[in-house]
Length: 135
Image (cartoon, rainbow, N blue to C red; front, side, top):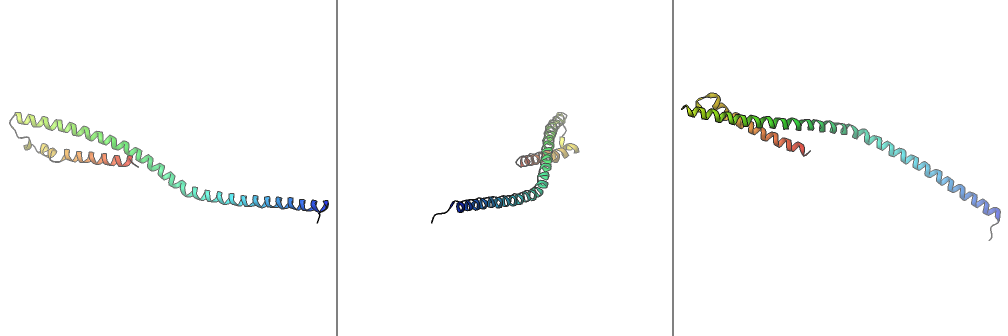
């Protein structure tokens, strides 16, 4: 059966209105989807931003801590070097005049613990510094 011009025009107009209605529905769906995505983004950022702020603060504390540890390691190295030199000089001077350097309480105290304690502290600082650098 052959369609007349009026019938074809009616079908064409209905098809166009259907397409336009479909486009309006797609726009509404897109608006809804974008709105939900925006809400989700805000929710995630509200959760993540405080953690990021804490991470930045910790990073700064670690940077300062590394600087402090480097300063400490240099101070310890200088103290050990100076201590070894002074201890050797004292021992040599004591030997020259025929005295056992271990009869001096301060010498014995330094020899038995402080230098070793500083070396241990220096090793601990070095290990901690390496651990912080790896973060």
